[in-house]
Image (tube, rainbow, N blue to C red; front, side, top):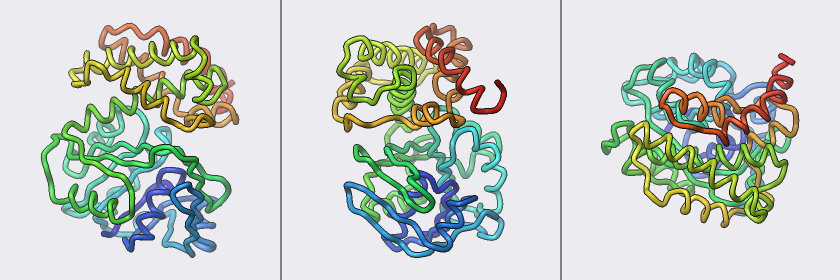
Length: 309
């Protein structure tokens, strides 16, 4: 398959590199030092699942140079997505699929509004990886998986082709029976763990071990579960318990991307994580006091990182 990866950070860099290893025709859409490194030195993956050192790769900051592809993996941060989406139309052919791997629950809707419904899939990425220097992606362990499906959950040839490409690359991948539930289940974990972790300034191993922060995690997840059900998303009744059981399997040193961004003074996805829970909760009449507390506590740091404070 010919695949365009927009955003070559922890998610896009890792998935793209594994797809290259499997022989897929991958072009990276990146910028700055990461773009220069991919073009000249290539990509290096450091991972418990096996390291990889790839030579110089196809990369550009002008998507129009790429032309139509079979699949677009949108792997930028949520706050970068609006600019990235404007670069997608030249990549689209009649059967191209666009898979948003953003955190949050609004990415697919935003893509449909910008591109129309035809190319858009729902997508979920489960990976703890980040840029550890230009051209260097570090995977710290835990799950490395993807899920995607048509938004109406029907089977399609393009989903099967992309799923098969991921499998050839040795990536864990599924096509869920309900992609919307899968998106919200991932959101339940990442928004809760990222928000509580950022406020507590501790990794997941500490959050799950200390009774107070473990309780906060469970309460934050319950708020998201209630919100999802109010929006007619079908979640299992025991999903909070199952998500906490998943938390207990993760590497103790793990942290969410929002937590790392806040700690290092960078702009984060706060408005699309706890901020979205609060905003969507108000619209649906669902109380979200834990996420409101998280959002209010982290907002000054976020405004400072944006140069607004």
